[in-house]
Image (cartoon, rainbow, N blue to C red; front, side, top):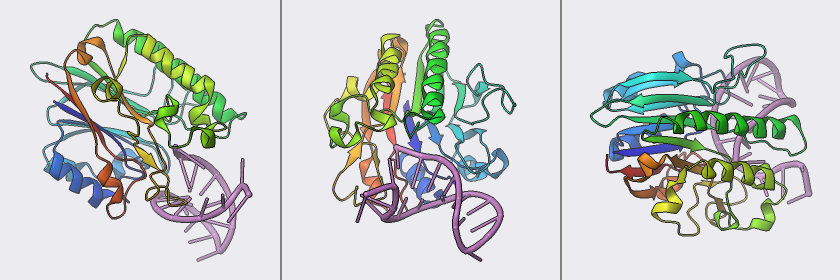
Length: 264
DNA sequence: ATGCCTAACACCGTTAGA
């Protein structure tokens, strides 16, 4: 089973590009982030024609996540626990969608769009860190189930200096703050495995290149899209492929797909 | 040099992304 994660930067602006990649690769499961539309504006029929079941947790203009699966999606959860979407007190940002991928060997998969958090020293950065704490708490609950689990998405976290073309250029950025990196390590210390590091780990495995300043031709990239696996999933990890060529196509997202293969 | 792209929404600019 191949599980893909891809921040598409607007599913409707990117539809032809995204459908082209899905037609070629046909991953069994995919997590999409930044769909930037309400549920009813998500082009579900186009994916259904490719054989996918679709679950969407969207909102107007910003954020939004979706899950695609060749087999039916069960036990769908929208939003992290602690959120009251769409509520006044709770979290009104659509950044988390979880479901069980049905089949002979079910896998629980979550699509994650972790807050960016810039600029540091503001409510946005505090919100990012709170969101990471809530994710940590929920991950503990899921790990206690002792089942195959993949938490996949745009984490907006550069884990280590090897994951950025120029660490010094990112020291003041929310994606590379000590507190951000520490919260990401805390997820790993719960027992979650960073699939890319376990399967490959080569430096320069970037997943994002800014649209600005010639970041792509200069290869000024960062690795911020991650698949974190429970032990029951990591035990079956066969490989991870970063589809970096997608960044050079017409009308690209600034992120590229990352695909983990599990022998499940 | 807190901008340099890109997208959404509504407007002919602002907000957000990372």
